[in-house]
Image (cartoon, helix red, strand yellow):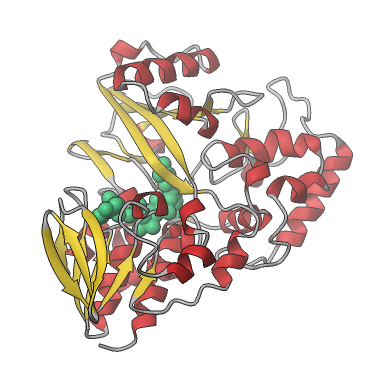
Length: 423
Ligand SMILES: Cc1cc2nc3c(=O)[nH]c(=O)nc-3n(C[C@H](O)[C@H](O)[C@H](O)COP(=O)(O)OP(=O)(O)OC[C@H]3O[C@@H](n4cnc5c(N)ncnc54)[C@H](O)[C@@H]3O)c2cc1C
């Protein structure tokens, strides 16, 4: 079959690669000038890059690792000690990695009875499969689920971890929180030369049209027409691998009403993300990773030496800082011009870390803005997904159809390809 794949992120490229292996003729359409989607890296010079989206992979990402192995890219993986959304971190202390969180003065933030319940909950989570999706208690929000642990744990552990990049706990599925924590108990990897390097390699095996934003898809007899850059190309089947808020612009109800309703397609929400990366030559400061308490406009501030890089790689003898806006704050930041966002992020961060060198002293200043950063998986989302039968001619893929991570995107791409069978 002749198959069109819309979107050259991890989901679309995986689908296209597997479809090609199965004997189909595949064309990939990508709106941007480059492939990789949210695994993009910005490059600033030799040995210096920033992973602007996904910053790490884990040993729980079995399908991603298998795919990288197949294409000869597994050797690029470097084990790291990841911090940030991968851990429950409070005032520089990692709960999962280094024990119970305390204030800077050394007092426990979580009272003894809650600590006991938290321990029991984490034991209960032992052996919980990290990246499948289950419909167990899927109508429950994350907030309801952790109510049983206690309010201090919710405030000091779960909210800082889950609300910064994702969404308020009251809007997330409990299953999303459980499986994310289960996935955190793994070895973390960074990708040498940037998170997008393996995807660039995979794209070399494929017919990818970059700078080609799909404007419309429509039915034409037995074929599906894809309209992009004023050209119209006909296909037997399509994989739509873009976040629904982007897909809504060209996917019309007229073609496949069944999945629009079944998947709640038009309502799928993505959180935004603004982050400011700063770097300059200099002696390494102490590692800082803090979250304001209570949650403010900034979700996290990191300031580290080159050797500790978790979101990219700095030249030796450099230091870098990464300031991430809180998810709730992105809506306020997004309409503002770059200069304004940069200044606001920096000012908010320097209230938390006053030692941060002045903004104009950093040699590299790079503002990252994701309009559609991470899918918000509300209660009921996984039940809807479990009921979604991927049936050609149009099949959906993307992190929102599986899990909000690279592995979720890869698995969704493989499932989409499988739905088409052999070519
Ligand atoms: C800041 C941030 C940090 C993250 N951290 C991690 C992490 O550490 N680990 C992890 O596993 N995951 C992380 N993620 C999530 C991970 O990056 C995503 O889940 C995954 O990359 C999504 O892949 P995808 O293929 O579903 O979507 P995307 O990568 O978004 O791909 C969709 C593609 O479709 C293209 N497109 C859109 N509209 C059109 C159109 N009309 N025509 C043609 N093409 C179009 C887009 O340009 C894009 O390239 C992070 C994401 C962000 C934003």
